[in-house]
Image (cartoon, rainbow, N blue to C red; front, side, top):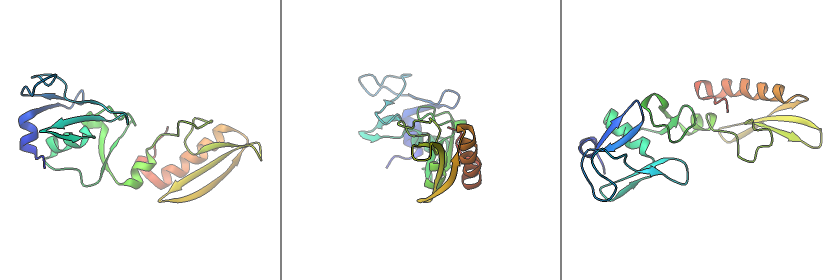
Amino acid sequence: MLDQQRARELLDYNSETGHLTWRVSRGGAARVGAVAGGVGNDGYWRVAIDGKRFPAAHRVIWLIVYGRWPANELDHVNGDRTDNRLCNLREATRHQQMGNSKSRRNSRSGIKGVCWCKRTQQWRADIEVNGHHYFLGYFDRLDDAATAYQKSAVDCFGAFAGSR
């Protein structure tokens, strides 16, 4: 398994840009000073080191900076999976990660936890916490449903309550 010493031998980390760059040439595009890795289909920055693929370069960054692998998951505070600046990374549980997730791509409201209910012709707000689904109410106005979700998210997820 990769350790901090080996990672630091091969890579430099710039906490201002969030980029990993090669300290040594590794062949091909991996030349000294070149940005290491690239963005995968899932939107996360990936890197390969010593023949092993790391699909989440932010975990390698955590190892380089703190000398240990993260105990749980790492959360991108602003939700941008490619933004690996240290100020944008924080350890999180799965529960906390779910609080900071974005609304679904197919969301008609564009607001997490809010959907249109055809039957009542109103906006419906719901929240999921630790696998349990909670109904927050029906609302005539989208803004009211969004506010209900956000208040509940802050109560349930605290600082991890995303505003997306």
